[in-house]
Image (cartoon, rainbow, N blue to C red):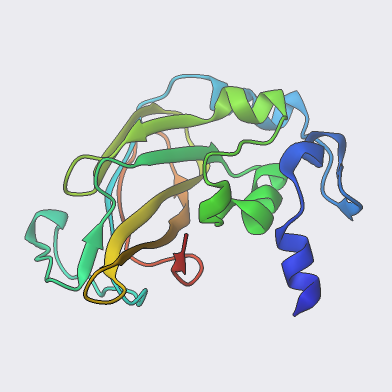
Length: 188
């Protein structure tokens, strides 16, 4: 358990060099792995991000417009949403660091990763949309936060990161529900 805490505290600064404070991570990917992601396509990824306040997944049935949000559900309102190519480097980064709410804004120093990243901001209902996407595999993620009463006088901010990996074909339009935390919600 202590090793996990130590690994979680590792800085992102060393990711581009292949070593992060003694923890081996993949070296930066080659330009060929990112080439197609740096072009414009005709694909679309849209969706909505929300989670139960307790951090449990929400079962979704039907189109996004029909989802009724009860009191115990929180949406990713006005939150940044990132879309990264799911290259081997990006997948390892996501697995190790990308689901941490404390590191949500951090980006590896790899210049190809930074150039290929797309971002948007969700609306007040947690909806987001990315257009002009080339085919490929993508990591989409956002943070979901809320205030929760601690006692009758105080509240604490809670939340986590919701994310998934999506395969997109040429010209395809995909709808995704980010409806649960990648890791349990935390107090921060």
